[in-house]
Image (tube, rainbow, N blue to C red):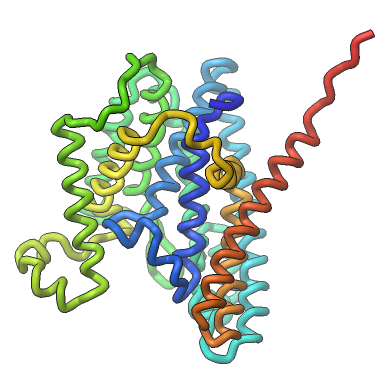
Amino acid sequence: MTNGRDPRIDFFRGLALIFIFWDHVPQNPLAHFTVRNFGFSDAAEIFVFLAGYAAVLAYGKIARRDGFLIATVKILRRAWVLYVVHIFLLALLMGIVFFANSHVETRDLVQEMGLQYFLSNPQQALVDELLLRFKPNLMDPLPLYILLLIGLPAVLPLMLRKAEYVVGLSVMLYLAAPWFQWNLAATDGGVWFFNPMAWQLLFILGGAAAIHGQRPRVPQTRALPRQPLFVAAAVYLLVTGLIALSWKWPAIHDAFMPKMLGEWLYPISKTNLSPVRLLHFLAMAYVVAKLLPSHGWTQNWLAQQSCRMGRYSLEVFCFGVLLAPLADMLNAQASDALAMQIFSATLGVALMAMLGAWLDFNKRLNRPMPMATA
């Protein structure tokens, strides 16, 4: 822990930001190494879970120290800042995509980024933007986080006292949402890609994990765990990993996937956070938490870069959203040559890391200087 922060949380938030960037650059070869290729969940689950963890950790501390009213005001103020950022980010993204599209002849970047709606319905698109209904590609996580943050004051008092009750209510809402087809409206009669009625469960589970992590625990050795739950989680990760890998070779997948299992398993809904996706993420988080040392490993240079990005996740996420179409433009101008694809993906991460380092340095510059003693 540094200054009350858990560097492991920052590290995985930074890693999730890298994966999100790579996954949203079309034909990016480095996207083959992100978590979505080895199971049913992807970086979105990591991002939302850790957002809940960090939010409850930060605002729970404020609520205990200053009271729930102050915590609520600060939560809503943060949500307002995120809303304003969302509006300006979308404006910048549209400008960059339109610029990039004018320099690319091989494909339509406006269509790829989901901005065609703005061209055909500009006035309605502006209204939908203000109502968080117009969300081009890459923009979905931010409105989801805004809504989850707005709802946090309603459950934070109970969560700090009886987190299991809040988790129980959250599970009920998660199960009811797809059954009753609860979701929020989006453009053209659609719905939110990330259904907040379902994805709130990951946010709540992250908050519950933060509260659980603050409780005193008996020190444990780092021997390989052999509990039945750990074994079951590891086996599930192995099986789902093999299934996910088989998607790259449809003939192999069709040959070995039992028909009844396929009919039960598919489609794996990301919108409603399918139970097999949720279970995959929870199994992955549990296994990593059991195997990974609690300290020390985050001190190496590469881990520190990810930690810095995670500490400034909002700024780095927004920067990654803007970099993705620029990387796509570079790749298209080079006829999607492999060398350029690797270069643009690596350069994007380097720029995101540089932003994190600059923000960290700038924060230290703004700290008040200690008073000189006579």
